[in-house]
Length: 195
Length: 234
Image (cartoon, rainbow over all chains, first blue to last red; front, side, top):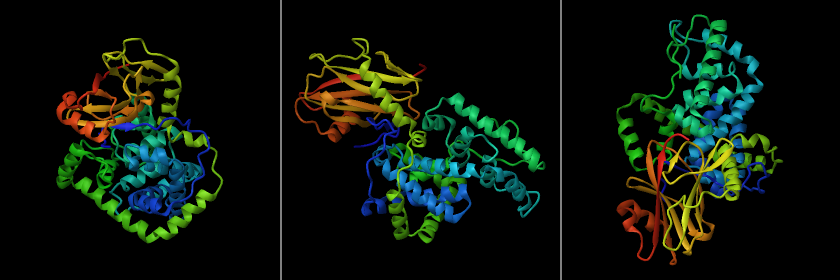
């Protein structure tokens, strides 16, 4: 079957909260999934968790989740988008457990710069600022600033309206500005950059 | 000092580069991305990062270790499914759409009928409600479901057609024809084409014929129902 880019087939018939069938790891299937998606998932886990051991564990956890939901994974218009979202969600949950650390991380980010006149690395700054934002805004921020999806694509992906996505991105920015003014007052975000 | 957090560029998206590398972009999109990549430093950088990630995972978690770890996770008890629902709101919405969509019948005459009386019905989930989409085909965002009512032919292929591109939504017995899908992407209009026949239909050749020749391309002896799909506000 061909796929039109503008089509997403939705798997039906499962409520999503029933326990999945028992799953065993078929080696051939696992090798295929590893080849196609492990690098992106591991990259996302390393980025969000900043700890290689935790990232390795998260990588395996994410694939176990994907295998338990294999029909949905297979039916996704973009398997890459689907599994990255699972990875992001999994890591944000772990990240949240340590959210108290973001102030120290932000201060460290300021100190770690090689050249003081340069802002911290863009994605690193986004990652640390996630800790300052409410749960609902975090995923939207990753999809926007890291995956660089448009707001319309994010709305589609999250199953939310465009105004809701915009609101969440604004929440993230407001929290980010506040966090910067408290912990790294020398650094500001550009004005007029409201999503 | 001003720190830019980034975000999507006019034509740049790290995820789209990933999807390109993974072979997930279709015809036009793929060509557009290929051309864009050649002249875009930012997307080339994203490409380099993807290559670096590949080397990293091979080094840090070689396949054997990965496979053993995943098997171990799968053997562990399944976590409560409540959190899982948040990952797949679309799947849950589709299930809901099916549950409600069947119970609520659309207005008679919502779909165009064949001579034999087969019609199509299109539903959309809007918030908590499922509504029948009218013959104008105007839909907002949200999951859709195309169904057949009183099919008088044995086999059906349901297609989404956008210009010269077509995609199979459903292929099989017409009694069970039901296609939950979500219409995304930049197009503002499309056509839902239903091909009915008493002979077995090869979905791929029907799809190709309709993509190339429109509804005139369907196999001899089959019937067609076409209904518009228009992006609008609901």
